[in-house]
Each structure stands twice: as structure tokens, then as C-alpha cells.
Length: 302
Image (cartoon, rainbow, N blue to C red; front, side, top):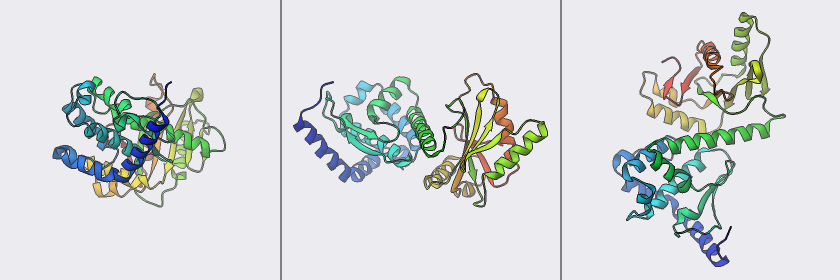
């Protein structure tokens, strides 16, 4: 692949440093310029990607339309905003870098990439054409969740004494919000062991490490309960409460500083759909927990 000249590369590096210095002001001004129905949601939270997707679809018909916009700074702004959300909300040493590949148009976003444990990518090229072709406003949000899941899998594997067993992949994903800081993951272990003991099943519940509980099913299939106590959990709890429209107490939801992330290995045929519901039902008796279906924005008991 051809690369830009040393002089051009130096100019790109200078542009990156200028952008990093002024990015908060640049993005702040762009957000203020948006219609209020969109600007009010642009808080760099994960859910704001849904509103951004809606804005892009309503504002532009095709990728060519956005490239021909009379306001080329918006191209950069959209790309920068997407990248900043990924950087702020995914664990790891995430940062902006420059590409040394030639581009048709020397607009910042075409050679500014986001890099981290999820791999380098260009926010505009990876997100905007796809969302405009499909007309599905959740495409950027879905990409974020995929990359976050990928990073989570990598970090857990790196910190574990051995490889996580199972088929890999993700299905039946829930956030189990922890209301009471006295909660211990062993409470889930005990509840599930009691459940299987009543069924006369063998001991299939055990810890992979202190923060990762496994439930072994037939055919090397596993369900996972992973405790997350990172600083970002509280902010995401606040976002969940902000967007929740049900009858549960939003104050309690927003105060959850930790959660247990639940998922099963990839299950394309739905062989374990009933099992995942039986497992979650065992946790309903624990009043320290709230089981949230983040894909549908509702709680398990609603």
C-alpha cells in the first residue's frame, strides 16, 4: 500500500496535536449547533450513539450526501464524537492515532483513527456509510457493544490463570445491577448450586477466578457471571436510569456502583434459551440485585 510522504505525515501529526488541544472546544461548539432534540443527548455516554445515529439518518440520505455537505467540519465532528465515546467508555489505553495511508480528501477524519485493545479503526468509514445504507440508527451503538465485548474477553483472558472454557461468543446478555455494596458473587454461586441440587444435577457451578463464575451445561456450553466494579459502572447505571421508562425507582438504579455481567456462549440455535431464564429466575429472590435487559431497556421481571 502506498504511503504519504514524510512531509505529509508530519503535517498530519501536527494536525493531530492541534485537534487534541482543541477537541473539547470543537466538539462543544458542534454539539451546541445541533437541534436541541439531539444536542441534549450528546453527553459522550454510550446511549448517545443511538441519538447520533438517528441524527445522521435524518440529516443525510446517503454517504455521498454527507461528503458533499456544505459544512465539512461536521464530517470531522461526527467522526471525532464517535471516537471519543469509544475512548471514554471502553477499558484500556485508548487514543487517537494517524494513518499513513493516502486519502482522497485531506479531511481530518479520513486519517485520524481510534486505537486501543479493540484494534485501530476510522470512526467515519467504519460507521457512517453503514448506518446510511441500512437506515438502522443503532448501528454505531451495536459496533460499540461488539468492540467492548471483544475487549472484555481479551482482558479477562489476559488476567486469568487459564483460558476461559466454553464455545466463546455472546448470547443472552444482561446487566445484573448491584444495589447493596455488601453483595458477594458467592451469593449467586450458592443460589445456583442449591437450584441444581434440587434438580439432582451434578456440581456444575464453579469459579474461573474471583470475579468470574461459570455454569457448565452439556456439550461444553457455559453461562458466565462476571463481576464488574470499575468506575465506569456508576456512569452507565446513571445512563440506564436516565433512559428507563418503567416503574422501578430510578434513584436506586442510578446509584448502582457495581454489576454482574451475565451472558451465555454463542447459541445460534437457541438450545439454551430456557436454561438462561431458569438461572436468572433463581436470582430474583436476592433483593440486592436488579436484572436489566439492556438490549430492550427493561428489567427481567417486567
